Image (cartoon, rainbow, N blue to C red; front, side, top):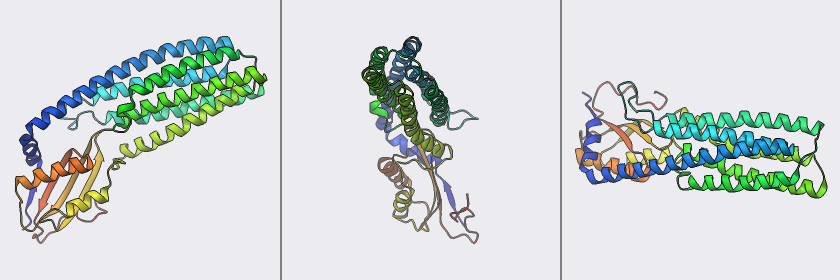
Length: 324
């Protein structure tokens, strides 16, 4: 007869023994949430104000590059709002319907941000092609001064997200938007200098196309990673082969199957697995040690393990790797 153990209670029990760690973790999450909320609020306020300034001066200077950058910055404001909203939703507790809470909203926000940027770049590219056919006079010096302001605002906003860009895809999207905007503003300023020196008006649409290329390159990675997480792929920082090897090497384990690793949000990862242990239930200390190791080594904080003895005449139907 096959004997299996549902370890959901053991998961809670193991964390209960680490009471001080839990309080420290909660305090760290609250501090990080407050820091990110402040960063989003400052970034949204500064960038919206700059969008208005860029549109006014772009129309005055007759610069497509400035207007294109304003459109990009407006999409960034929307993106920051989405990312901020998703970060807030991720903190909501689980419910009977949403048993993981709304953590997955951060993945959706990253995906929507990527798609929004791609739409904006298509519009900018089209306008640039039309401007090649009909170049208009523009004010190069105004392009330069407005773009220098953009470098300061976008660079400063990117700095606000610098600390969390590697640990959260949602925040990474916001950081990439701001960092690429600073680079784009630098490109527009250089185009303004070149136009003043040479008088070549075609440099304005060229700068716009360079903006498109910069945005596309930065967006592609964000789109790829957000789609992968939405399809419940293992996060990039987790190697499933290493996780399986670790589980196989645990004392008393002779087989591991039905191993699944997926992202609950852009910062939290979950794992489920069946361990075949002929010796039976190994005890609470085994699970407490394993879960602590898995979180420490692989940054997987939500672990559920089921134990099977492998003695049943009817083997687990989920054992083959191709079965889900």
